[in-house]
Image 1 (spheres, rainbow, N blue to C red):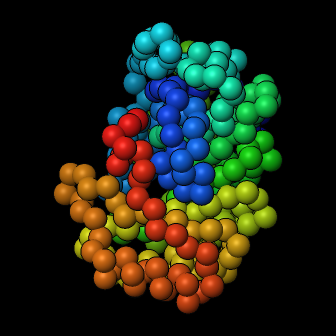
Image 2 (cartoon, helix red, strand yellow):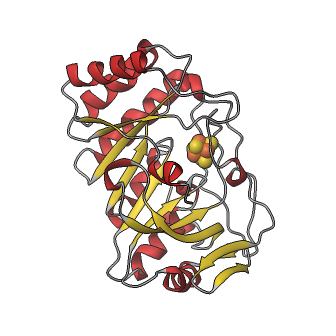
Amino acid sequence: MDATRNSAAAPLLEVFASIQGEGSWVGEPQVFVRLAGCPLRCSWCDTPESWLVGQGPSQVFGLQGTQEHDLWASPFIVLTWILSVEPREPRTISITGGEPLMWPGFIRGLAAIKGPRRLHLETAGAHPEALAAVLEQVDHVSLDLKPHQDMGSPVPLDVEGPLGERPWGEENPQTPAQWRLARRRCLGLVREHDACAKLILSAGRSAQDYQVILEDLAQSAPAVPLFLQPVTPCRQISAPDEELLTEVLEDARDLGLTVRVVPQVHKSLGIQ
Ligand code: SF4
């Protein structure tokens, strides 16, 4: 599949300036570009409003207040909105979602015009072909390692933009074997790249549930740092207890991984 066949425009939910709350760049002031559309269904998803591509509008939380725009936006238009929300000096841009790899053409387009800003990608790690299509254009990849037990059945995106824009058509993983294959392929791609891996831990799981993920990371990308992220409680999902957290942490250390425990910092600060 060729990313250039994807139109560069993408459906945009919001652009805002905030503090990175996860992963190895935690605490950095960034501008977040949240794209709409995700075919995956994580049980603890904190942005379910991003799953479907609605009719808009996009929201830009700028220095002059909130502005609404058309849902579908080109990289150039989004860059003008980034400029409007940056408080002062240019910031790192984090492209998030939704699953931003539904729109690799947009990511490549924004990378070409972003100027001095770093471009970071936050992805579910389910679509290795799309990741390969943008990898050289992004400065950092934050890759989720999804426990298949936490994943509902995927719902393929069926949407078309005003100029015929279509989401990336790669198959969504569903079975444990498909998830493992996608995970290992994504990890293999980022093993020499600036990247981190995130694993969300929740109550009701055992350390054994996470073991295969730790082993995949140790085998496919052993130098990529791992961030264990206790889930922020939502709906019926609770945070893991200390025993589970410690056990997974020690399992990761036993495998020689560089591992840290970091909850969602922006949530604890009460910011977006
Ligand atoms: S991949 Fe991200 S946006 Fe999609 S369901 Fe999971 S957490 Fe939510």
